[in-house]
Amino acid sequence: MGIIRENLPVKGDKGEGKVTVLFNSGASRSLVRSDIAEGLSTSKELLVPREFTVANGGKIDCKYLCELIVEIEGKEIGIEAFPVENLPAPLIFGALDMEAYMIKLDLAKRRLDLSEFTGYMLALCIAVQV
Image (cartoon, rainbow, N blue to C red; front, top):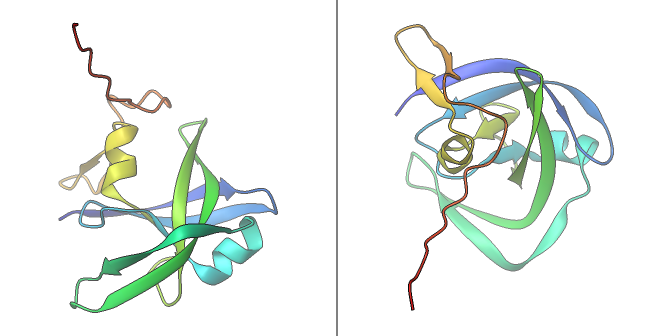
């Protein structure tokens, strides 16, 4: 598991601001502290609540999702984050979003490795021959 912190511009449909973003390869999904989510974005109720297991083995129930735009290297990328109380950082950028945007962690230099980052989401397409 690797963790890198960056202060980045983040915005939603209600507001914007500089936010400390924790890029965490040990978190599968992106999470946002509820008070930050409330100021930036209108949360949407999920059809089915999600339950997450955290590092200490505890469970977190999420009933909402919010859309956020994070600016990295001048490119705006969209993520869907689950609002959660009491996070260790305002925004946790999870491994699935890092993988989708080809963002890597350079732990030796304690920074993001954006060598393959284009600002576009990688989509998996499987061609089936009939």
